Amino acid sequence: MSIGIRLLILGLGLVFFMIIFEMVRRKKFREELSVTWFIISIAIMASSVADKIIDPLARTLGIGYPPALIFIWVVFFLLLALLYFSLVISDLKGKVKELSQKIALIEHEISRIRKP
Image 1 (cartoon, helix red, strand yellow):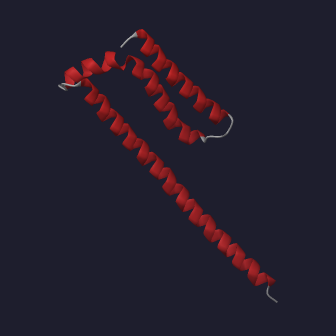
Image 2: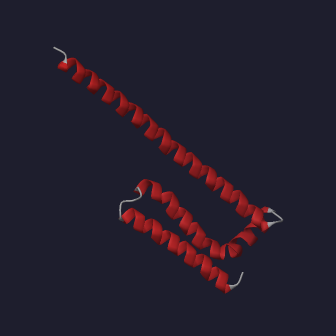
Image 3: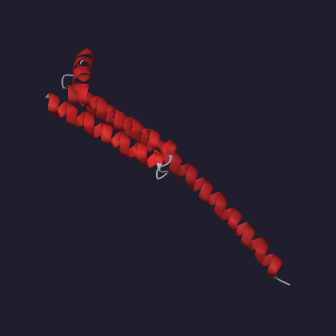
C-alpha cells in the first residue's frame, strides 16, 4: 500500500474520530454509545498499517488469504456491536414500558380524584 493511501486512511479515521468527539461534546450523542464509534474510528486509523500486522499473523495462523482474516475480525466485531446495541434497545424498551405504566397509574389517580 502506498504512503499516500496510508495517510488518506489515517486522515479519514482521524476526521471520523473528531466528528464523534464533537458530537459528544455538544451533547448530540450519548457518551456510552460513542465508545463503540470511537473504537471503530481507531480501527480505521489502525487499518492504515494493518497489512504490516495482518500478513504475518495470517501466515502464522495458516490462513492463505490474509484479507480473510480481516473479514473474520470485521464480522466478529459487527456481531459484538449488534449485541451491544440490542442490549441498549432492550433496556430502553423496558424503561419505556415502566414509564407508560406509571403514567397510566397517575392518569387513573387523577381521574379518580376529579370524580365527585
